[in-house]
Amino acid sequence: MIELSGLGIDIGFEPLEEPPPTRLPAASIPPWMIRPGVLIAPIAQLKASLRTSDSGANATYPIASGFDRLLAAPGLEVDVHPFKVYGDVELPLWEHFTGNQVAAAVLVRVNIAIMF
Image (cartoon, rainbow, N blue to C red; front, side, top):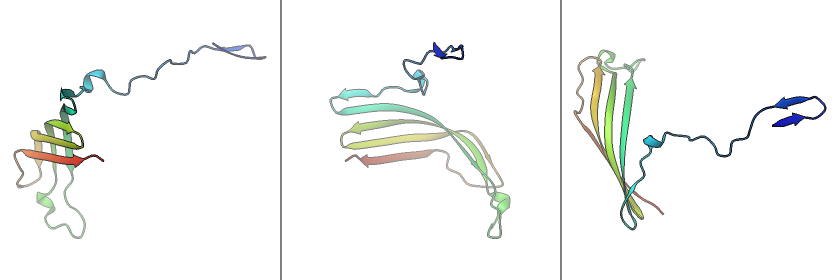
């Protein structure tokens, strides 16, 4: 309780002892330690991609450009110091393409990084 002296005003609040969580506990899964120095973390993502049709003076064929899609991307990250390898497979849940377009049925991503 804070009292402003001379004014007789009480402000009723208690300071927080710890800040509120920034993300839901269920959203973060701790990595699994396979053996000392080797961590594996499962990752699940939903990815949305919204692209409008081409426009402007240099648009070659705006009738068949642009798309909207929603992808599910289960993945895995492996951390073996100093290397980190990440991979996921992006699977379409929903797609809408403008005109006739060719698109991959599945997208695969692999990233290899070195930490120093």
